[in-house]
Image 1 (tube, rainbow, N blue to C red):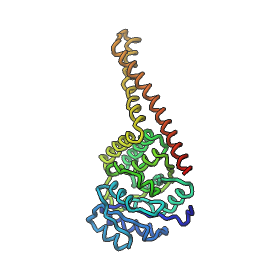
Image 2 (image 1 turned 135 degrees about the vertical axis):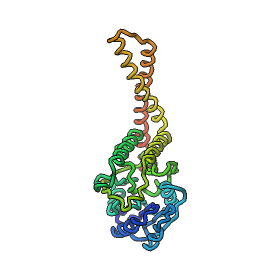
Image 3 (image 1 turned 60 degrees about the vertical axis):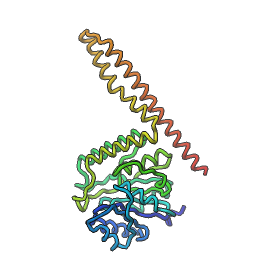
Image 4 (image 1 turned 180 degrees about the vertical axis):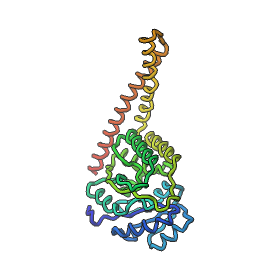
Length: 305
């Protein structure tokens, strides 16, 4: 594949971003992306966003469904005859200068998904709560899917169009990024990250992420783990018995050795819970290794096609 002539499109999901969308489009065009490669997917803006998009001469598409997941699902049905789709938000937080780099890294290294990991943060771009929440959710994702990513929820990434079309888009709202990554890694596709900058919103009032969205993303991650690796998920839940068994066993042991009080029934329960939890933990680890073996087999099969 000639990476210099790679065919790709840049997609900007947006909703009421009249103060930022014009600058976002101008910045995209300034890095060498032609107007016919830019698609703005609008979720029903009422603040003049649509007028700005039309004035810039790029393609405007009405999304089907609600939320960001609806915008990306809409695009998945439209992108034909292109190799990659690059996504970035319409709030001017993601610098468009990284678009060529995302595509180049994906093409030259054969990656199916390249994520722009937000490493360089403009002061005031993310609150402490946002940073902690993003870090925690990424750690949960890494545990559930056996990955080592640093920013699974980044809104800027390049993905192969055929991989994008495989998704069922079962997540809700802002959990769509985690669904995209979950599908990609679970099906044996290759994922990479590159460091990018992250800026403050031009319109602070247009901020859409709240704590409840973080909770919903966490719920979506759990549902995705159940779908893509149910064996690991079941045994992982079983391993949580250790959280009850170990403290209970320590409490029984303390009273047995230091106070002379013997709790035989509670001790038996602690032993059963600990053994069941430990066995489940071992099986969960085994399930992860089996999943990795499955991924390697899938990759080899794709190479032979």
